[in-house]
Image 1: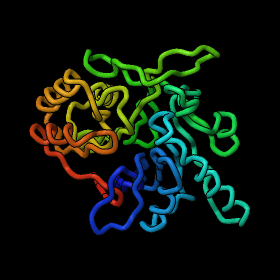
Image 2 (image 1 turned 90 degrees about the vertical axis):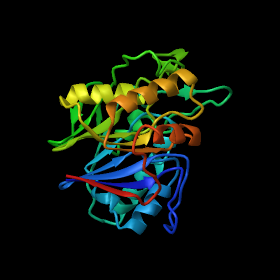
Image 3 (image 1 turned 135 degrees about the vertical axis):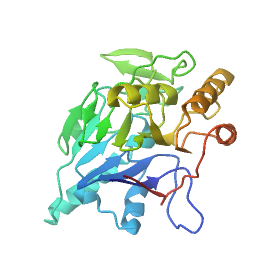
Image 4 (image 1 turned 60 degrees about the vertical axis):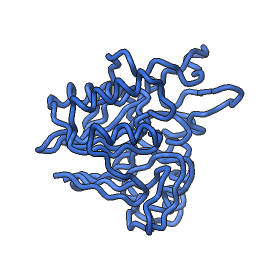
Length: 280
């Protein structure tokens, strides 16, 4: 059984007194395995998890969907949490950090010198056991990190976001490190995304390929549909109408117009900090 709790999202739910911010952090528990998926932008995910009774010192994995600041800058606060616990002789696990090999490269946009991780791969390796993977990596018998997502359609992931420095060379950033988690339930796939820079439809297609299952129970996370082009939005709507997933929890980087349009073709549900989802 998988339990997912939203620790950070752009929105909070009514009468749930948590902190929201434009970022993503989810806590997933598959049996006895505890996973933090993204870290948001600040320490909000830590403050929220404490109020929810979720113990981040028990993590087995920290998984990063990609390297942007709204998903990685909370790493600084997570390292502080673990370092201070060790100083106080508090029991804590040594989690494995899972990400794409390009997740920690320097990224720029306009005159902003860094929109990627503030902590280098070398520094992170002092605090985590690193697993940087392009290929799918199974974290449990039922939960897989997709690695580098195949991009096969012609309406998503067409426009770069700023620039990235790779091997000393600056180039357009198509965020090839963008990935997702997939849970294989008896009823079908549960797909958990960060921002879907790879394209939400590309991610779903790749998840079906990796897991060998065409059934989709739920999709939760950012769909990268804020201010999207007409071609991208229409392509996504047509894809979702044909796919007919059980439910859809579009969050983070999915704007109001996109949610309204999605609600016409799928069973769209609200997302906010504190949301709990469970799957067999």
